Image 1 (cartoon, helix red, strand yellow):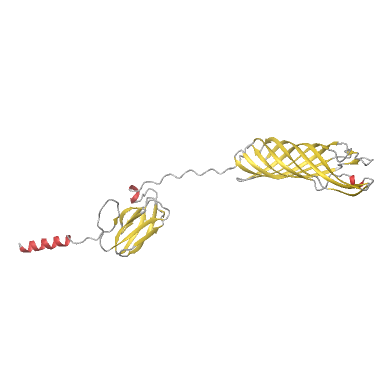
Image 2 (cartoon, one colour):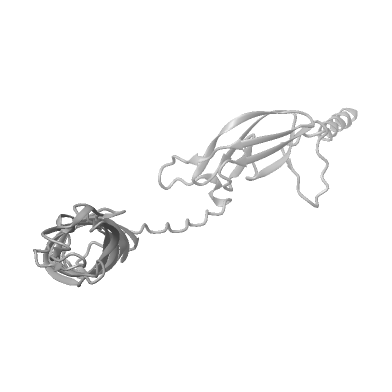
Length: 333
């Protein structure tokens, strides 16, 4: 009988001894005394996803997790339905706080074999749909646009004012100006046919000495243009590149170039070519940037008489070559 009592007392004494805690999370409002010989551990997942935390093969919570662990080595890992991080061995030091960051990667598991944590982790919310990239439509359809252009005529207007009798010390600048184009047409992708109309204003300066008197006068010009052209386009997801060519004409008028000068007007048949780059802003609207070439023949009939000269002079003559850099907006597919 005494032997049985002694064995019972020994058993109860062993059971009453301290049992090491694997982990004790610090939960607000709960007064739970941690073991004396412990350190504090904070476990996070690098991408801040909520994944089950495993300490010494026991699930203790989800990331981010923190709690007290006994001093010594422990194996920590994170494991989820679709994510997993290999276990790491950490050494807990008494009274110290250790931060552990684990990197979860997609789980390589056979189809139909869910992780044992699947019942404990809420599924991640579906990702928001990505914003669609802006791309122009390539379908056939009507299109149109407006263009603002500068005007350069590097070859000059062909005036013969500097070769007139009694004129010395003469120079004439190349015409410079600008204008506005509008166009509309129909595209059969990649070919488009459109009509183009425009208004241009330019001017040059003439400096000359006549009868020992020096003078500087402006030579203004205004013109109405039209053309029919074909365009060929190459499309990518980000931009559209196009080249075009056409035929048309220009009706232009030259203003006074000095006291007593008469105005002159002329009509010039023309050819045109252009290159353009269009960047879609929406599927139906694009910003355009490019260069026009405009060539016309003014003939030899645009003459005026400018006092004190007694003979008519050509204010413009023969071939007129214009370069027109432009930018604008286009609508259509």
